[in-house]
Image (spheres, rainbow, N blue to C red):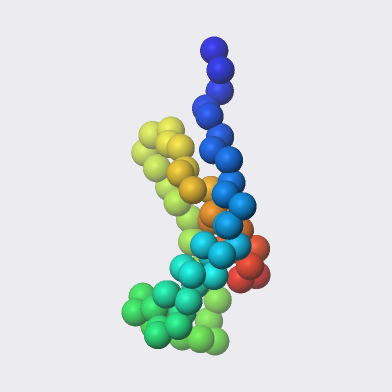
Length: 67
């Protein structure tokens, strides 16, 4: 039995990330205002059942960009 199919990462992924960050950061992300600029936060994704994360390459690339 074959494993899950991993989608190809598009060549324009950096441009997609730039566009998404401009949208969220440019005019101010409403949810980001909930955390003071001087505070660092960490998040976790917890599921009750096994799950597949869609868009992992995009999430990884965004976090690498912002780190």
